[in-house]
Length: 254
Image (cartoon, rainbow, N blue to C red; front, side):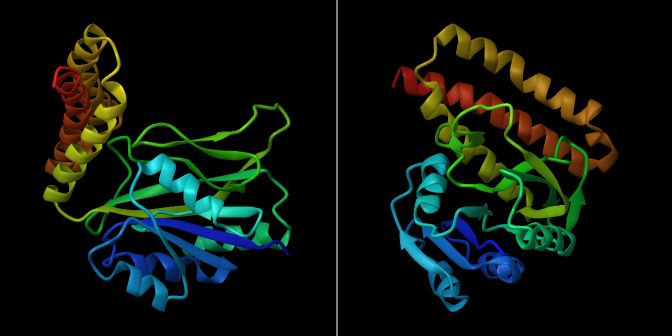
């Protein structure tokens, strides 16, 4: 049976980290937490749960996620966020592949996002398919400071990605204030990467992309079926898109 490293990045995740670690314990041969100097009890809780702790200054989501992988001991890694939980069905699916010595190069799964206690399968939030388990020698995270993307190091037609049964549960926002705060934070981080773009490109994207995002997710992705909550989610998704280009223009001329 192959061994599996669980890798997590954290910053002030005391509310969620214990639940996250507990959900992967049955498949973990080691748990590594890369913490960006949390000011709450995140580190103490993770240590109590048996995780190995490394602390480094936050350099962006892409850099942090690649860095924590570099500290892992095993060939296959499972990358999970501190506010995520492996469902029982997904856990069972991973256990089956682990017993088979992980025959695929990578594994993808659906992610089910929650707003408070409510699972949201509209607004473009589901199936939200992610690759989170893979042979670390074959792939890495790429991208800027935010919205990192998973990618094979070298594109080959014979790479095998298998789909796992079960959802990765993402307890992303508890309140509207959390949604607003995260939208502004992600927009600010994205703007730092975008500021080198041509100003006319940034203006065009700011004007066109935000309404497109709202229309797609609210109407075509059925956000309207969630009532007021669906409107709120889709609205702030579009606000984040608008702000990242607006902030990029501000940075360009700061």
